[in-house]
Image (tube, rainbow, N blue to C red; front, side):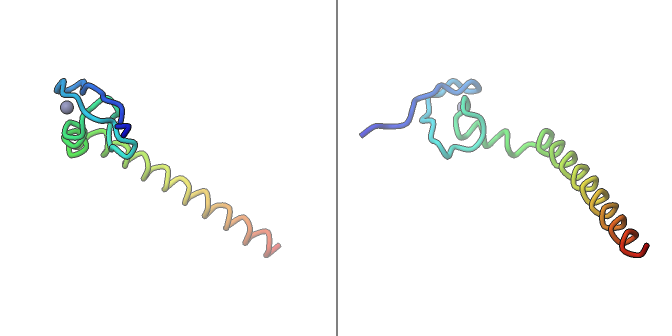
Length: 74
Ligand SMILES: [Zn+2]
């Protein structure tokens, strides 16, 4: 039975099976990936950017709808 590729974790040096559905980095063992995911920082930063993008998309959507309404009135 063929297993998954064995990788060495860059954080703790432990060997681990790189499973296709493993969350986190491909060069980190599952426990080191978990430690990273729990901490704040990059994730929070990404959320902030996502929120900003969402706000910009919503603003653009409102503008387009407003333009359509004005066009209909004239
Ligand atoms: Zn590790």
